[in-house]
Amino acid sequence: MKKRLFTFIIGGLTAALIGLMIIQSYWIKNAIMVKEAEFIGGVKRAMERVVFDLEKQERARLMKEWYTRMGYDDSTRMAMVPQMMDPSVFQSIINPNVVLPIEQRINAKTLDSLIGLELQNQGINTEYEFGVFSKNRYVMAIQKTGKYPDQLLNESYSIGLFPNDLVGEVNYLLLYFPHKNRFLISRLWMLLSVSIVLVLIIIFSFGYSLWTIRRQKKLSELKNDFINNMTHEFKTPISTIALACEALNDKDIAGSGEAVSTYVDIIKQENDRLKKMAERILQSASLEKGKLNMKAEEVDMHQVIENAINNIRLQVRNRGGEISLSLNAQEHIVKGDPVHLTNVIYNLLDNANKYSPEAPRIRIETQNTYSELKISVQDRGIGISKANQKKIFDKLYRVPTGNIHNVKGFGLGLGYVKAVVEQHQGRIKLESELQKGTKFDIYLPLLKK
Ligand SMILES: Nc1ncnc2c1ncn2[C@@H]1O[C@H](COP(=O)(O)OP(=O)(O)O)[C@@H](O)[C@H]1O
Ligand SMILES: [Mg+2]
Image (cartoon, rainbow, N blue to C red; front, side, top):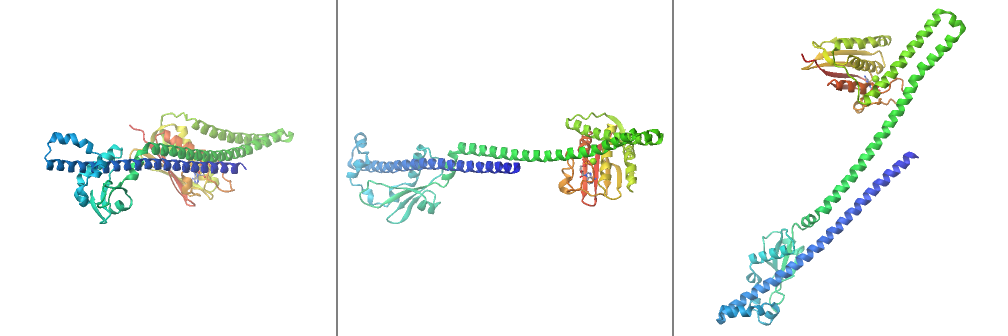
């Protein structure tokens, strides 16, 4: 039920996010359309101005020729020109140029600078290509560069040239903008970039939340396992002690000194076990708070290894296994805490023993590398899969074994090992293959002399 609700919420959130993004892109598209309409308006106004200017210029030229031919001087001419400037006035005078082909009436360079100027006035500063198309002859009479001929015919803005001509050829001015979309988008970059950043922030936060939720869920599962495990492990010694106490209460047994000492021994042993377990858990708690108090003494690691082996040798022998040693390092003194370092080696040996289903064969080797001491602990046990190799150093993590949980543990050992090694400026490496065995390599910096 809870899980379904969770899936439902995630699904709803995802849908809402996608919906928002669609709406957002719709608005952006709208904004681009508005900008495009503005752009088209600007182009149209610029082209109208160009057409008007062309007529004005041609007329001024004709007038000048005419006056010169009539022999007027400059001052008279200046006085007359302004009233003749309006093309509609000029309409009534027969324009002799209408019979000329358009390329002789318009100079490409002049036209280009005129178009450039008018576009600039409309705030349109992107590359353009223009052409003058003669409808009667069906040819492109003038072109700026000769590029984009097809686009110029099919995707351009057009306007009739010399609209006040009464007779003669019909010509069009065509204008094409090869980077129109880029120009429009550049006009909207603020809106676009803010939207993109916002959407990215939302996606990132959403992903991060999902990731955190998943991690928390896993962690709480691990903690559940841990608590079950711990209760289980504490229960056995507690009930053993309870049984022993009951026996000691028995009058018959209380009379026999031998029996009493047996039961007292049992109680002591079980009590030791409880103490060790409590210590291990406390250790990892202090690990979490980040205050493992480390001494910094000169420690002989070969001695440490011997000590650790003494703690576990009996268990290994009882299972028919053996621990072989090859202490090859010439230099084996490091600076550190002897108790924690012993725990490190002991934890590795304990795992090697626990995770070897048959008689454990454990090998410890030391070696000097350039400035480090390398300690390898190798077993021929069940091995660890690649996927799990990354996780086993996490606190509380234990490789899932389905229903069979015959190997006891809290999943605290390797996290502790790694923390201690790293506090000694060392590092730990792992090589393992399923069913073949596992090798942990610890590198510790040697004491400098
Ligand atoms: N030598 C090994 N061979 C196979 N698996 C191992 C070995 N050492 C550790 N593991 C795996 O890594 C897990 C974490 O180890 P550890 O932190 O020591 O926890 P614990 O021993 O309490 O389970 C173990 O549960 C086990 O699955
Ligand atoms: Mg362990």
